[in-house]
Length: 257
Image 1 (cartoon, rainbow, N blue to C red):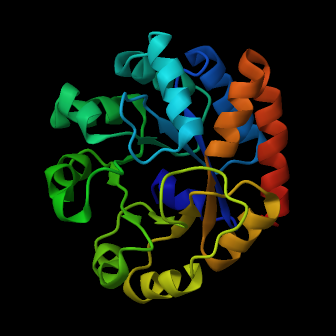
Image 2: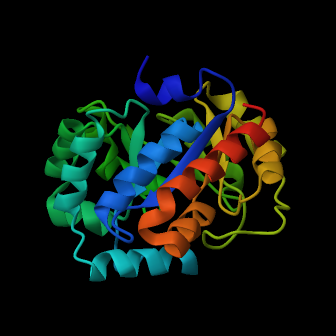
């Protein structure tokens, strides 16, 4: 069993997203550890990028602050290596194709494997283009994690059949961000996924309250929360880790997981 599979073995998984380097990498590392203490089963680490097209204003602003602060992909890799000395939960990168291209696909995957990363999510790479990246990931034991959106429609079964790691189900149209209500028929999407793969699926985009997380996790195998955590870190800066711990703990408990 790989680390990603293990994240879904003990009830519903809580997946926390954190932008690397906002306000600095030391705070990012402390926030990751705090999220794990709070019960996070898997961590998504956002590598800052100048044009994060899938992100809403909260995560875009975090990307901008991190880049202005001098964060680089090299520094993120070094932080992950240090985290792996005491963090055992799976960690995956969420970033953009150009970040991988700038390093070189093979070299980027080599460095992921060396640092202890378990997979990657590239939201700007459509299913039809994933084979440019997936073979290099597979060769190094990394999962190239696919997204399924409300617009995927008749492609859901096809994407599910080739899924690796876990499937990221996008709850709402548009970019990331906190939403007061999620109206997409997640149950129907999950039903198609279940008919085509045994790989777990988790729902993200817009989840910020324990009630939302529980509803999405009840329909799937877990909930992904990003903007609400990134906003906490933006508001509390270097003092954020204790707030991240309390927030993640309340979300995990609220899911009944």
